[in-house]
Every structure is written in C-alpha cells, then in structure tokens.
Length: 85
Image 1 (cartoon, rainbow, N blue to C red):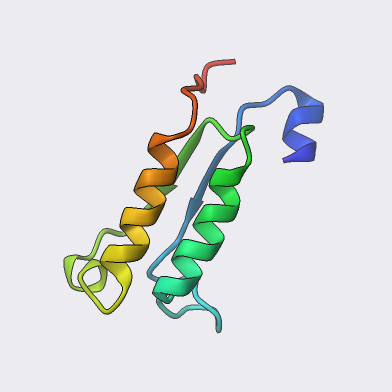
Image 2: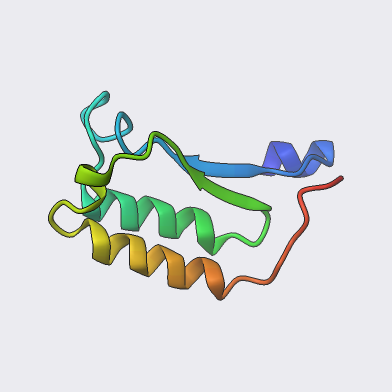
C-alpha cells in the first residue's frame, strides 16, 4: 500500500479464496478469509476489494457463509472511494 500511495496509484486488493490458502494452492479456510479480508478492509486506502474464481460449493462450506457475511458488513461500513485516479 505504501508503494501505491507513494506513486499516486489507486489500489485494488483481493483474495484468491480457492488457491490462496496456507499451505499455498489450497482453498482458504473461513478463518483465513475473514482474518485476511478484514485486514485489507481495515485500511481506507484500497478503492476496491475483490475475490475471484466463484465456487458455490466452497462458498457454502463450513463457516464460509459467516466469514463472507462479516466481510460484507465491513465493506458496507467503509466510505465510498473511487478507483479513478
């Protein structure tokens, strides 16, 4: 984030929930999604937060609906920021 700010760039952040877990190339756990997503959403600098590779089965798995709801609430409580420079 510091480098993007220094260069005057807008920053889009996100999670690769299907292949971004620990260990690498594994699905993220609900705890990882909520913890890591929340850390990204805590900063006011990013202009957007995304996730990719939608998978209904994964998103309905244990704990995931609660983690996604928590991130959704956090995102809705952020002030609006344009990604246009």
